[in-house]
Length: 202
Ligand SMILES: [Zn+2]
Figure (cartoon, protein in one colour):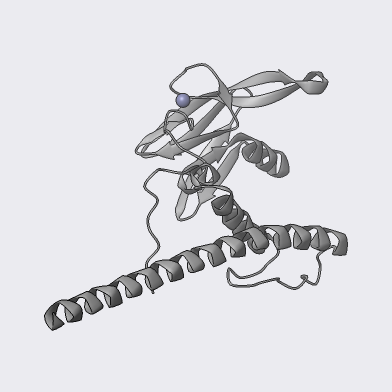
């Protein structure tokens, strides 16, 4: 089996994420300011205070200020300031190459931004939908999970149908293109053979 290519551009989805809304809901649920962060194999501890967040990463403690940013409905939304202290507030900071910083500082991109076009995005959406519906990557249409809502399942199934059509159209197009190219190669090889026999005959 072919090994999947490693992404050349760092993507958000593969960086260690420190997400403030998630941390705050964990603090609210447990009633304690310390939260254990788990992302894949990495574990660490974060302490959330009123205006500051402390995260232990890479053998030191990183501090990030929490800003209350006014949003719609005159509410205040807590957002993180990047430890590099530039303009802008963020929901998430990322740990990469020994530094906790925002996605701009790390030049992280969303995986969907790296998709080559509509077909690439459709393939990604299809993969995510399949996961949400509890299916496997090879499934055409996963069956409804025992506890899933029927209406929600129908909505997801409709969406999956749409993106699958785009995805399979692209696959068919690619196969046809390869087929035409192969046939072209075969024809030109046959042509060359004919030329050689003609030349040797004359
Ligand atoms: Zn930054």
